[in-house]
Length: 122
Image (cartoon, rainbow, N blue to C red; front, side, top):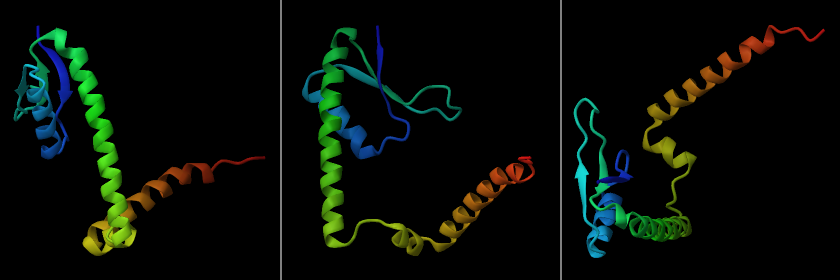
């Protein structure tokens, strides 16, 4: 019986490709379900053989540790070069979006605080 192994919703293509390659390299049989227009089916990788689940989980855990280390190293290199994303870089990238999101955040905070201002602490 097939077993859900990895949900692909929101996963970058590069990462999904690396996971597929990892399973292929270790001869773990799998198939994918694509996303549907109406979100009826789940975009995911499924294992055909339940007995390979533990091996696949172990491989995925090792891959995610390596991915985490790689991303941290890439970010550290960008910081060293002065190219790491920061608040000012995000603002310069799309100032209108930054301003709109800032206003939305301010509105949410304001609407959250208003009920407290009407309370009396006598």
